[in-house]
Length: 301
Image (cartoon, rainbow, N blue to C red; front, side, top):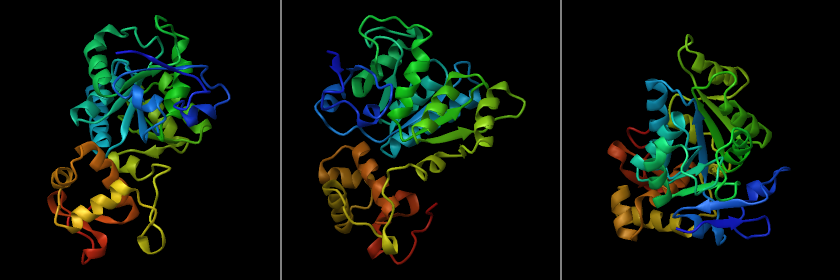
């Protein structure tokens, strides 16, 4: 697996990084998605999940569940490959068969931290490990605050799960605010020092997260419904999904089989269609076109 180096002159360099005053001189990509993105394919919709290294069982469970459910919705999960919350978020995305990218503070060929070697290998197999450090660069303390601006810039929003008041996760949240990204925080026990960071963010106006719906419902850049709850300008894959539903495919698996597509991509397009008001989700996840439904589908949240 060969690393790809991108500069601002290259087509695949992310537009969100070009807009930074301190844009990385180079971006190093390694992993299954590297070639596709370097060739100019749009960088996918992504949400960053960050938090404490010495996380509690509660924090780890929340981060893993959020990572899994975001991936099920077709959103790429970003994190920093650290132990604790980062690793749990990456693992959740992989559990769902989704895509996760790790933004690191060392060379992409450096196996750091060693305790996450297996996780890193799994991320490389289906996603991406990336950073601004040249190959062979060790993980040094001052690399990580700088890394955080890349993590937030590549995301639509940043979710903080457990962090002390001086945590690096709050640095990522500050970058997100400066870059116009959404900031989300998961509350925790008031007696825990790891709750202080998220609770401080909530006092500053961060979005409260009790479940993945609180994140998905606030993603900027996701097209909302137009007049009358409808929206035009659907992509061809979305049009094909609507046609498949009209022809009787009422589940994600049935749509994937009919169209010959992978499930994660179907889930991503369905999220867009649901937000636009084109598709309704009924009991047991059954799908129907809004235009043919007699009202809101039963069991819809």
